[in-house]
Every structure is written in C-alpha cells, then in structure tokens.
Image 1: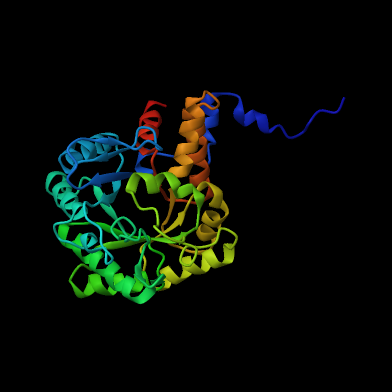
Image 2: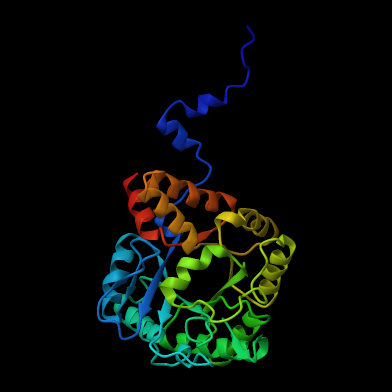
Length: 326
C-alpha cells in the first residue's frame, strides 16, 4: 500500500492546533450594526420580513446603542423613516430630521465610544421611493448629488463620523467631499456604497425602510449583477473622487468583487451583508433546515476571507454574542 507523503490533516488534529493555523479571523470589532429609527414612533415595531429586526422610536435609540456597544461592536449605520415624504426628499436634510436627531442624541450620550455612520440616500424620503430626484420619469443625476450633499452636511452638523452615500449617482463622492470640506467638516469620512448592485436581495430592507420605488426600478443607476468590470470601475471612480472606505453590496453573491477590490486597491473595504441574505438564513433556521449559528459564522467568515475589512450586517448583535462565547 502506498501511503500519502503529505498529510494536511496533521494541522487539524485538535481544536487548539486548528486555532493556531487559522488564517481568517472574525471579531465583533469587524462588524457594523444597522439601526432603523422612525419618526413619531411610540413603541418598537417588528419588521415582519426580518426576524428580530425592529424599527425604533427615537426614545429607544440610547438603549439600543448601549446594547450594541456592550457587545463590543464599534459602529452603527443609521437609516431613517420619516413621517412626511415629498418629491425633493426634504426631510432627509432637515436639521431636525429623524436621523439628525438620532445622531445628536447618540453623540451626546456616547461621545467617541461609538462610530456613528448614516445612510445618505433619498429612497426613504421621496414620494417616488427612488434614490434620486425625479424629472418626469427620469432620475436626474446632478440635482440629486446636490441634494445628497445637503444631507451629508446636515448629518455632519449633527455630529456624524461617517456619511455613507448609497444612491449610486455619478459624482456623488466628489460632490459630498467638496461640500463637507467647504463647510469645515474635513474630518467627516465617506464610506460609499461604491458597487451597489441591482439586487433582489434588498427586498426585506424595502419593507423595513418603506422605500420601494413607486414606479419603474433602479436599473438605471445600480450596477448590473452581470458586470464585474463595471463594478470595479465604480470602485475606482469613488477612490479617485476621495472616498475613505469603499463598499461592495450585497456581499455573499459578490465575494469575487470583494476579493478583486482587495487585490487591486490599497483602501479599506467594507461589505454589506444585506437584508435578503439575513432573511434567507432566518427563514431556513426557523424551519430547522440549517444551524443558524454555524451558517452565520460561515457566511461572515467567507466575507472576511474574501478581503473585507468590515461587514455591515443584520447579524451583528447575534454574531458578536457567539463570537465572544467561543
């Protein structure tokens, strides 16, 4: 009998040995927790399509951020649901808007103990549900980036650390960077949703944030999932415009783009493990078809292995708990 000369199983003989040679690590400090805050809400509202995810009233924000902080998660991503919507998305840049109030409250109560990030987009705030300003039935690029800049400035005035434009308008990073610098907010960083794909994985988020488009779709501004080179061009464009962190979104079906971005560019890379990824796991776990803890770990480790420095994920709190237990 011929025996194998190379025995890779030698490195797997015990748990401690496996820990010693483990190549990819995942910690709560790698995670960013999304938070939904809704204007004029009195009590928490469950998001039916996303088990354990809730829309919060402003009065509950401090408790929620405290829970996140206690889990050693260093950052949150705020999404606002306003009471009023209009064609211009005016409440998105209102200095007394729901996100702006939440930022101010968190900053006052937590100081620098939590990195505060917030979405910069219009879909939750426009009557159309689109991510930009509508002219006729066209999403108009240049007036949209002017509005996105207003949103970023209003968030900076409230005390934001990082603005996160997700509208996929051409030139949005350049416009926001200039606007922030001109207003004296040069320390506010930008984490752009640089390669945000036209994806069916966003459906539960649209339920959570009440932002489904009222007509048409988002194919004219979000990246086709068929076009890897185009996605990398979007990332490179944002880098050239002065972005601080690039993001690939969604994560699990786009691991190749995370890896390619890491290979090509020397810049922090974020990945957004989106609502559909979360809902699929939760749904399967509820039926007993998968082990939720193990499959969550496998997904998040694969995103890190592909090259992401940080992960925005709805699993943030549950993942932080079992990472600290292990």
